[in-house]
Image 1 (cartoon, protein in one colour):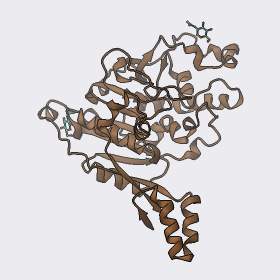
Image 2: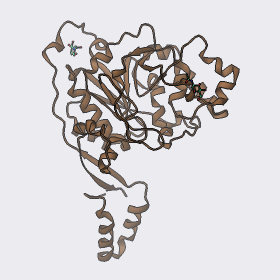
Image 3: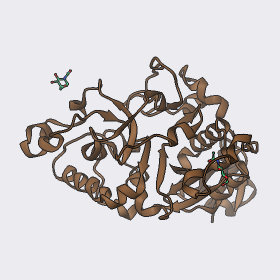
Image 4: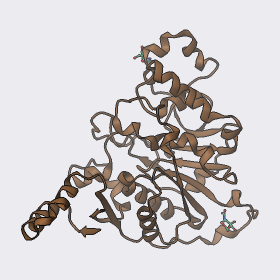
Length: 352
Ligand SMILES: *[C@@H]1O[C@H](CO)[C@@H](O)[C@H](O)[C@H]1NC(C)=O
Ligand SMILES: *[C@@H]1O[C@H](CO)[C@@H](O)[C@H](O)[C@H]1NC(C)=O
């Protein structure tokens, strides 16, 4: 294995190697063609965030009351977002040592695990493998390729993946920044509901499903007796026990199977969850999901903030702040993400 510190230098390096070593042709081919070539980013070490004085008082000694369980997908392509999200959560927590992270990942890559450990030496976290075979053959093509990644569907399988002692979780996408104490979201009263999230009843719900769906009497009846509103599955508080008991994974899968036969929606993992839960969730203040900062799904145009207080910023949509900042064409909202960026540099690892 050899390491190079700068990606643009690679081409030059390989030419130089080639000039000095006639046998390195294979290496050069390796660089340009092999899928085992990975870019490994490096991050600055985050400070040690410690509990405040109020953290040890008055709660019972019960793991579930004291520990905030956060589930996030972990993918090499989004790791810069994940690191920033984790930092933002710890930095705004009154009791950061009481936050536990559960990362769902397709590959349990030791290099990624050690990257998290070196960036957050004090982090309380576990990695879980999400087997993409769980959703193989179940995913339908959406309007954006990134939405079709198996890992996007991992949130539907949390109840199977997480240990039984985890009763409640906050699920968060990796393109978010939290600017408030996450404990406030954790304490939401579900009131018998399985899921809590900000609801958007002004968004035209009709548009999330196709004419095929609405014109089919049996399908359209799905929302009978509910007032369905859009919610975003990138920020959810979920009663995992209730999800498990209610067999909601299977219910979402059933809609994915219908989507395979008739195209009833255009987006990825979101609509089947809406089909099961919309109109039957606990609404949370909008401040907990300022979504759409990545722009639309097709072009990722810049968008401004919605009015009102903010506890969580979400770059849902095509544009990601780290990519727009790197390309020197950032949107104004991306400057809110930048202070949480721990990224230092990348190197390319050549594995043989
Ligand atoms: C934080 O965790 C400690 C140790 O488990 C516990 O004693 C304390 O009550 C927790 N604090 C809060 C506010 O949950
Ligand atoms: C919602 O969108 C549908 C389809 O585009 C349209 O027919 C309907 O009038 C809209 N409803 C509202 C309340 O705007």
